[in-house]
Amino acid sequence: MNKSKPARKFKFNPETLKYEDVGKSIRRTVRRIFSFLLYSCVVAVIYYAVYSIFFDTYSEYSIKRENKILAEHLTEIYDKYRKLNEVIMNISKRDTNIYSVIFETKPSDDIFANAEQSSAKYEFLQTKTIAELVLLAENRIEILTGKVRTQSKIADSFQYLVKSKQNEIRYIPAIVPVKNLHVNAVGASVGDKINPIHKSLQVHKGIDFATPVGTEVIATASGTVKDIISRKFSTGTEIIIDHGNDYETRYLYLNGAAVKKGAQVSRGDIIGKVGNIGVTVPHLHYEVRVGGKIADPLNYFFLELSPKEAILFAKASLSKGQSLD
Image 1 (cartoon, one colour):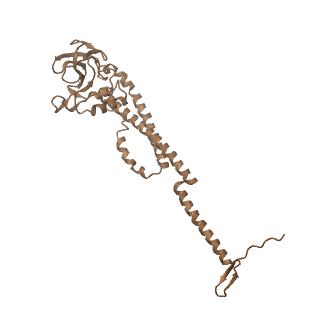
Image 2 (image 1 turned 180 degrees about the vertical axis):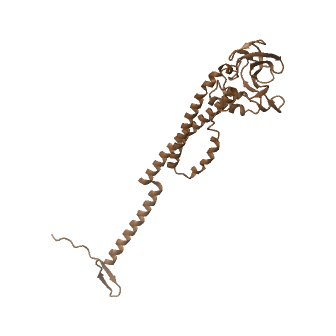
Image 3 (image 1 turned 90 degrees about the vertical axis):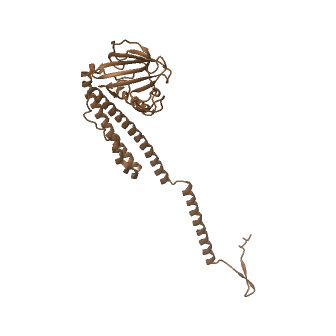
């Protein structure tokens, strides 16, 4: 059986008025191949552009993943730095208060005096890459860790001073006059505050603690009850304790006294309870005086409050623009 031959193609020639055999044209073939290649290139370019917009290449994915890991590591490092820095500043502030109140001097080596100012030196970090920031942050943490060790040694060094002054410390008002006091109950401290009755600025000589009627009030240091004053329609019962060495504390707005004038009291002894004179909300007004001058009681809670708690108390007190009395 004979195989069929491929069909031949003819084209009409208007000049000869005859159909002529077309055959295979090299030019026609080249043109078709070029068209196919051009079409393929256009499709490839469009495909690559679309893929690049919506998908990452392997190298791009690797770079993004590496940057993400570095960014997370940098966040962890800065969080450690922030916590270390906060601990250092709290220790420094607490030590300064202890030295000034108990030892009547300043710390021998205040290595954190310019810690806040130094932060301005790191503006150039904005131009650094994430990897460079990680290295700088780790280096900063090592420095802060060293400072923490140094500060710990400083704290250990004055333990001897604490022991040698232990008897005197008993007579320094260094605790909160109300037990189990929540930070939200802390009112305004020393300074110009708005009087709740007259609605005008007046000098507030102590710190207020908003507490329920009947809350027990304790002596903040050992001493002698110097005086008990009763003003029924103004400040209620006021107890004044002389601690010696020019220290004196005052407790106002009590409903009476659990001690007598001239009595010896120890730190933590109950001296009275919070009353209610009906003019303002029930609260205790507490004052500390050194050499007859008004002192901020916030600086005299170091034996009871941790550095973090002391900062919370200070923030709560400073945010109050109006006193309770």
